[in-house]
Length: 405
Image 1 (cartoon, one colour):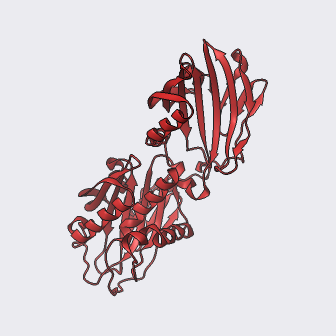
Image 2 (tube, one colour; image 1 turned 45 degrees about the vertical axis):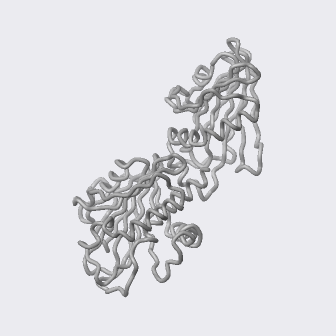
Image 3 (tube, helix red, strand yellow; image 1 turned 60 degrees about the horizontal axis):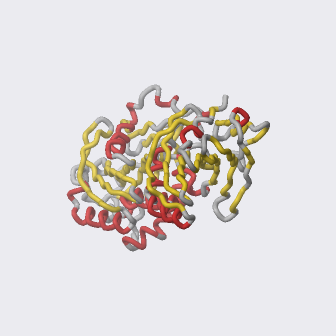
């Protein structure tokens, strides 16, 4: 499901460019040049614009952008809207934020000889274009699709945009497109922002400014040390004297401070499932309940690593709850009847975490579970699950964790 979500989100960003305007012979106006990304700032002399990103954004290389463009053009997009013929959008910037679900795309699109900035200022007025966009989004899996025109602040000016909203796998998706064109130029810029709230998608346009108005402190926002850490392979913790520590996740548990715990380090359990592995399994009988704690790692597919890094802890929980029916069915197949599955907030390693809480019955006994998910650490996700049969001890189990350092 997560792989499908990633592919569709890329499709949505590209759909705007592949279904834009039909080209005609260009009228050369000035020497063509492309944007440059350096020290957290994207500058484009051809369009006279800049975009201040910063250390929490990651920008694809030109080769990575072209690979995604070619893949989608050859598969999902071409299957949906047909051959694009002689028209080819040119990707110039693909940036995704490491924290939160947000992206900014810039494509070059050839202008027709009779195109003007005024005529292109409101994409919603092109009925054929909006009809095609809506049909394409629905075919790609977006539900509850709506389309409207919104004003955003771009380079200090109010500009009309085409806004498309809907849901995919229950997650709200908002994409906003702006066509930036200087009369007489051979190309226009198609700027697309994407986020899980409309306010955030609109706000992303505020990161743009004229190229001659870049803030003085903008160039200092990308320290080398700010890169997302890459995990060792695998990122298992260590267990000594009943003390479990994991530097990758930045947490520990001193099981020796609690009575009755039996702990083991896990090993990779399934070669076919993206290197799944359990780092620690601990069990104990506490307060008339059988308790267990598991710490589980999963390696991301390399091609999808960039988008997973952008999913917050709460969004990861929300994504899991979109397949609630499938999860409940899976529990039922293992003999458990689920009565509640919902999002809760708990304390773990002195931090506040969103969690998936599940309760029900198994063999006539109460079953409780709290599961934490974190996609933001690097090339592995971590899942921490506290379980108890009998009374509900799950929140107390998670409070046993302590931060390292």
